Image 1 (cartoon, rainbow, N blue to C red):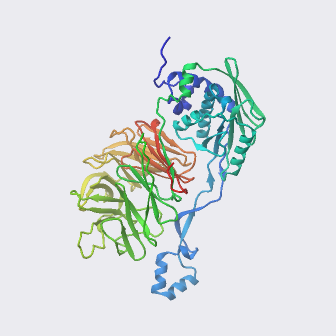
Image 2: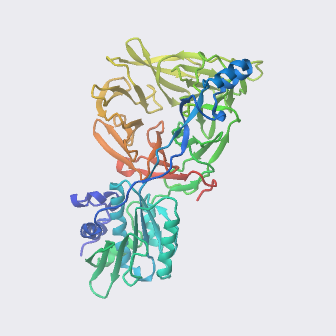
Image 3: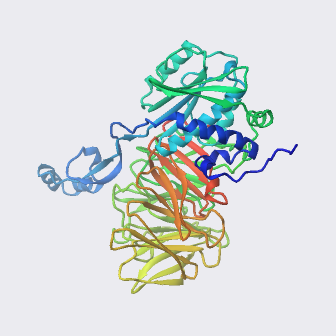
Length: 615
């Protein structure tokens, strides 16, 4: 008798749709589950999860309007009331005042599929293995319908969990109880689902054959009966269409290993928690240089939330930190230095270096010296540059006029700081910090794009040039950090005649590597590098439906991540190995890329709008 195989099998083509889950098990378990999946898949029928409409809510500021409430009147208009009150009244009478106009979010709610499992004595043993098969089948259905998949237990009405990793499957398998699910439990589940604000597309009730007849408010039913024979009786269906199937009982050894949670890939430890406030969906999350912290503002407040990201396998979890800047100031740029978070805030008359450069509030520079458009929710690109001897910092910012500006630290004992920044260059396409002491930037220079290296003292050194084509580049991205050239890869975007985006990849010497095209409505996010090799940088794009992140490069397209809810904002860490997303449901999720795109790990999930706790 041969020994069981405990290595990851090579999956045959019919089982490839369920690869993400089957890769967690050894060859014997895959052979058992694979047969069941192929036989049960036709029984489930077509999905019925649908996108539901819900009321729009304002989020951020998208433009200026001649109508609005006076709480949203521009600061420049209020300053006119002090300088020329008669002109202020005339503009008010003629409807010439300008107001900040909030942008409504798209009124769309993600479809949901809910699975409720009976974990009582009637489902112990082999029926629990059928639960695993249903779990995998419904996960695939949710992926194809871009739906959110959640699960719960019959004896715990109202408690739902998102399906995010194999740790959730292990939790479901280990949730055995002596309580028997009866009519009262299923009715309590029906009432709990009906009371939820977000509708549920499919509601699956998974239990024993002798449970109460009817759907009890659920849309789909799965009944598993383990008799004394060599087969498991499975009934699956919806209203008026129930199909039955006899499955062979599994071999004892692989069944016992699966029930015991014998995964080849260790269950992921995902940090979960809630933030004390609703996340802004207009400002992408901001990583620090190492990718170990991520920060983003809270909507409607002068406050930002900063999360210390746990490493894969780390047991200790850290709660989020909150940073509040002064009231009546707009935070126009933000930087993270190690665990610290600060930025530049301004109002109509003052500039405030909040926790930066040993400076406080000072007179605001002239508009041409530091151009900031009022009401723009996205922060300006910025970086903190450290003195080689560790004696101070300088702040580099790209303003709305595409000027690269540098402020130095105020020396101790100095009578008055320099108000105006030092202008380094104009026509800036991109800024990318490569080390605590330096950054690279790309700017337009005559008939080429110049790439320069900037240090703490404001000295800019040319590194490479890219020839300009007939079109001016629409954007430039850099990837990598911590090497002499300052970056590993750069990517330049042009617009083709048919409207598609053309992405040209170059190495550190600006030698052309690859040229790829993507649809114009796919949002370009940044360069990622899952393998760590210099030649494997790819562009991460957000698909037009906002439900999938895709890597595009010379090797083609690869799916990186799919979401059950719309992804409203997304960003990439400077090292290219981590991704942060904020969903329409207000959840911050941090992902880590492994050696290939099939090993994306969820590091943290934080829900906005809670009490600030860590689960």
